[in-house]
Image (tube, rainbow, N blue to C red; front, side, top):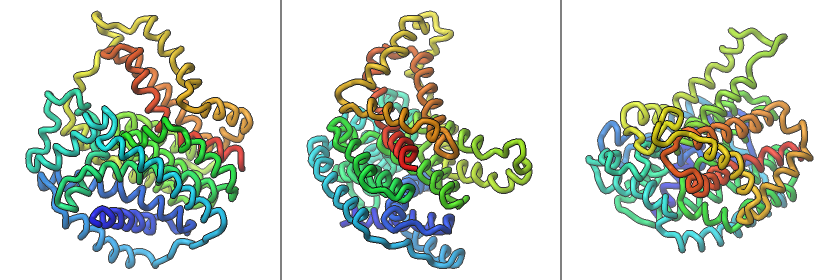
Length: 438
């Protein structure tokens, strides 16, 4: 019951934020899915600020903030309900989400503590923050370096927020959150493509391709922060495409907010957020015969502002809390573990074997075919920002593999590359689906 109350508070927080910044009324189901996705990030960052200011959590603060925010928002903007439609496509989409929940719940039951990295990194941090009370910062001690102490804390803090709200620890919270985030990802993808294209069956097929692969189900149930990263990257680019379709500039603010929250999920999320924000802003820059830079900054400067506001927890964490990354050796200057040609050869070859691995069920081969069929449409207008972000982000990841020689490259790529691709997978489907159907 407390968990449902936590979801309701998160949903309300997201609804209030979207209501203030977006005047275009979305279809109700998509509106609610985006609101809950955003709300989970908002309550996670609120837990961070409260821990910073009070050194431990106070369960009444987020409730008071949401209630006061409700009152304030009514004065800022007239109330506008989302457009409630229940067509065949909507009913079938909700039915598919219900069916998807079954294997997710079963898999989560068999992974109650998450996968190995979730148990030793994200869940360990969450338990330490919650049970440590005023000593919660000790989770960043150098002795815990194997738990990636330099990683941001959004995923653990979302779990902590639910525990604090209920006043007790429960392993069911991270299990349920892993299922909720997986369902949100599938829902945002289907109903987002439905809003953009109006087509049902291709979009259902796209969701089915993602969620029917056992490897993906296992990763979602493993409680890795990569699933949160994937949800926010997908939501950000969906908002960007909606901004273009409806000529609603404020949807770009939501896009930047999702990116800012994503930066607090993981170091890879920080890299992807910076790249995506840069590419989006470059896309919006006036062309030769466009408006002047002064007018452009007046219209779009607020995007930078809201990105920084949403990413502020990441900035605070990285500047004042995060310890040094001891699992890093700069291979360009190291004499003991230099970056050599053998390492570069593995980095150049291994991803291709990953793409054709049977665990993906042929997804990346289908994606390659979709890219060829869509052709130039994938690189025009806002859709092009997705493609450029994916290319630059994968380039940065591979460059980091080459630079950081602390880990043996074969082991590192075999354990982390698949999770990086897993986080990108929903956005890839959005990109290709939008390109094929518009």
